[in-house]
Length: 605
Image 1: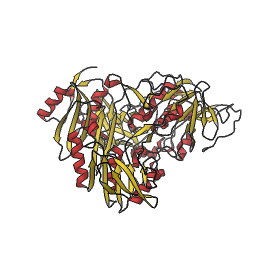
Image 2 (image 1 turned 45 degrees about the vertical axis):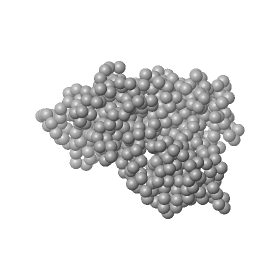
Image 3 (image 1 turned 180 degrees about the horizontal axis):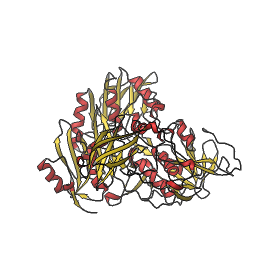
Image 4 (image 1 turned 45 degrees about the horizontal axis):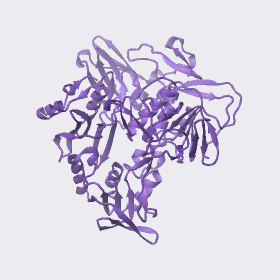
C-alpha cells in the first residue's frame, strides 16, 4: 500500500496555526485596518482571538522593507460599485468602492490570472470573468470556485481626499493567499489503522474537503487515499495540454501536505466499505477505521463494446501517462477519436496540428447538440473542419481491426473504414461506485450516490462529493442533478467538510464550466438540461456571441464566446436568487445591450 504511517506514540495533542512562508502578512487586518477575529479549534473546541489578545506565536513578523504605501487616486475618481486596477510601483492592486467603503486586494484571479477588474462586482464579492471564481472584497477569501487560493488583501486609508493603499511587496507580486490553517503536531493513542477523517479519492472534491477542514481549525487526523500514484492533480488539463507531466499539474506540492498534516496514500484502492463498523478494506487486505467518511472517487471512462477494444493503441484519457502516450503516438499519424464529447473535442483540437489526420466519430448529427444546441454546435463543428478535423456523424464503431497486435483500422457501422494508428475513446464516463455495493450507501440505477444539500448520504457520517453524486440544485427548484464539472467538485468538497464539522451549510452555487479550442474559450453557467429554446445575440459565425438557454419562460443556462463577462454576470444574477425571464432576454436582443444587466432580474426568489 502506498504512503506511510508513523508508529503511534502516547504524546500530547498540540495544534498550531500556520501562515505559509510566502504569505506572512498581516492576516488579521481588515481593509480599514481594524482587527478582525481569527477562530481556531483544538480538538473541536473553538476559541476566537482578537489581535490584542492572541498568543505571540500567531502574530506573523513583517519586514518593514517589504511594505509599500502609495496614493492611487482621488476619492471622487471612483463611484460606488466601481473597480479600478491601480499601480503601487512594485505591483498592482484592485481598488473597489462599494456602499461608500473602499477595499483593496489582489488584481489577478489566482486560478488562471484573469484580470478581476473585468469581472463582476456584486453583493460584496468579485466574480472572475473567465471561470467564475468569487472573492470576498473585505477579506480576499475564495467564496466560490475554481481554484484553491484567495487573494491578498491590502489596507486602505483616506487622507486629504486621496486614497492610499498600504501593501506587502511580496503579496503584490504573488497575487494569491492561502488561508490560515490548523496543523496537528502530534496525535495521541492512534494506531496506523484509525483516522478521524477518511477521504476516498484525491481529486478536487477530496482535496478541498481536506483543506477546508484545516481552514476551519480541525486538528485531528485526515487521510486521503487514491488508487493513482500521484498527489492530487488537475485532471481537466489532460485533454487540454496533453503533453503535461504529472508534476506540472499538481494542485498542491508535497511540502503543502506535510505542512498541514494531510496524509495522502497513493496506489491504495478501497474495495469495500463497512458503514456499520465504520471500516474500509483496501485491496491489499489492510483495514482502516474512520469517524467521518467522504466518498469522492470520481468517474471511470466508458469503453467500447466492440471487437478490438483492448488493443494496445486504443486509449481512454484518465492519467497523465495516457495523455502523454497518445501525443507521442499521434505525431504525424492517423488519429480517430470516438465521441464528440468535451474531452473528445479537446483532444481533437490539441492533436490536429501534430497528427497527419484527425477524425471524429459521433452518434449525434452535431457536436454538443444536447448541451449547447444545434446552432452553437454547428458553428463549433465548422471551426474544427477548418482546422482539418474530419467528422463522421450519426454512426458508431462496429470493429477495431488489428494487424500484428495493434489497431490499424476503425470500421464504422455505416461501412466506412478509417485508417488509424491511434484511437481515443471519449464517449462519457460512469461513476466509480462499484466498491459500495455491500456498504449500505444508497446508489441509484446509474451508479450515482444521492446526497442532500449538505452532501450527506443516507448513512450518518458518510458524505459524498464530485462526479459520483446527484444532488438538489437550488436554482433549478432543487432538481436532482449530476454536475460533473471541475468547479462543482470543489464546492461540494467544501460543503461536505463544513457539515462534517456540523455547521449545517447547504450548497447553493451556480454550475460554471469552460472549454478552450483553437485559442477560443467557451464559457457556460447554469444547468440547461431540458432547454426548449436558445436565444442568441451576436455573430455566431464569427464566434462572438452569447446564447441563453430557456425552459418555459425562464433562463436556465448561458454560454458565450468572446463576450466576457456576460456569463459571469448572468451567473451572479442566478446566484442572487433572482430569475431571468425569456421576454427580458428578447428585449436584450432587440436593444443589443451588452453592459449592465440589471434589467435581466425579472423576479425575486
